[in-house]
Length: 164
Image 1 (spheres, rainbow, N blue to C red):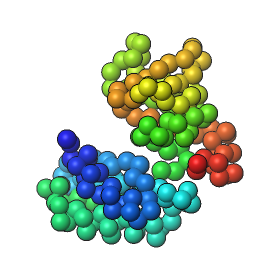
Image 2: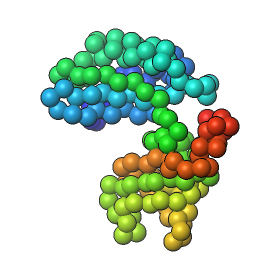
Image 3: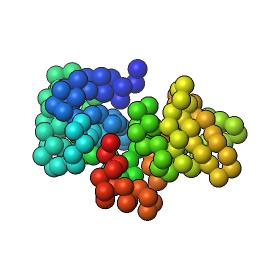
């Protein structure tokens, strides 16, 4: 288990009990790393600065006790934003019908980048309808995936439809 998974395991129960969903935990940098916590409200309302501050205080307290990072670090709490990363299987269901960009850790059908219409997830495979045809990308091989910023996504966000 890497340190990011360990941190997620430490903070997820508290963050979820506070009414938030943990979207991603990312630790980057060496000398003074940045721990980025990305979360969203379970009720679908927009994240506020107060929400981020509340999560930040709770996470700081938990990590002070558990101490999984052995150097000084910077904590950053944010919300996903419109062109959000897709990190959990449920994200690939929830955002079906939007354009997605998926990168894999190793080639799938001789390619590592898939851009097209997200069709959901089935049997551990993310389904992407690309201009060249359909692709089924194993969830376990996904390095990065995010929604593509385009007119359809912006329109849905403005109407509040991208929330749920």
